[in-house]
Image (cartoon, rainbow, N blue to C red; front, top):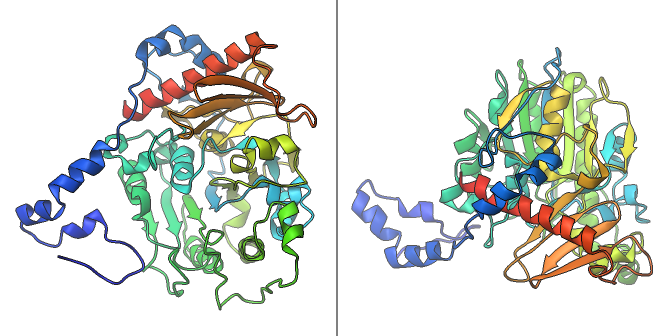
Length: 465
């Protein structure tokens, strides 16, 4: 018997306390291990469907494959002589409907809003699915996380992936996380696929731990900045916040941040917030980002760095009066989170509401700005490349309802395949957003169904090949 009192539950890795391999393997508990691994039962990709419909994917990606099942692309971008640093910030639960950028009446994100005025924003940007581990996986690999249980990062069969970051020759690479990188095998995703990446995590910081998520977002930004400001060569840094997450802890050490104590719950609910605690937690995340932006003003790396920010996912809410009712009805608040790029030396501020973007597009877009060539089995496209209306979609996936829900979202149409039935919605239509136009617009429905199925099957194939 083995136990402990700690922030984290026992992990598989803790079975290996002995140098005797038999003892270590036996401690894993073969019966329990067999049971757990048997639950990772994933669908097999339909290779014949992929071969037959490869033109759908080629049109979507604007790329001609040499062979139908060789889904790797080689992309060349105009060079950028500056060789800019890249700071990619994944902001926990950054739901679009809670932001001032989307006309939310509560002033929860003034720092983000100020930065947005100097940045290029892809406003119609979506995460394919819900959960932080899935968001990290999708952003890094450029393929949606279509795992039926938990996340693809947890499944050792999918441990080896093409990751564009690994191809940044001459760049130092960092992953900053306030807590432990052991969660969801995220450490494995980074270290197994990005050679030489330095994981900076709980235990490496001087700041105190606040709760189960490690140090606060405020301290995480300060600690990351301290490291990055000393580097004398190009670098890629992935900074992942975690504080805007239950239990929504506000740390004792919070500089001059003030907690709001007097907003009625009904008013909060109208703007998509479930509680005052959640509202203050988002305010603190924004405050932490603002303090980081202040530190950047006197840094040596600000002027030659691409700063990219997005959410790992949004949050489900039943009401948000600042958004069309179709958004809450079809649970799109879970998926929509804007993609912000701050690169003033090369990119003029603008709000792009025409291009439909996805997390799979993040690294291809950054690579174009940085002038980096890449070769990978990504389903992402640079968001700066013009795309036709027929292919201006983002892929959506959820393991629920069983067997799964998948779909596409565009400017006007939302296609969902759920309960093994086809649904086509005009999600922006204020009066008819609940009507299923499947029968009235069969051609549109079939096209969106085939493309969503193609993206799904291609993801299944790429993930294990």
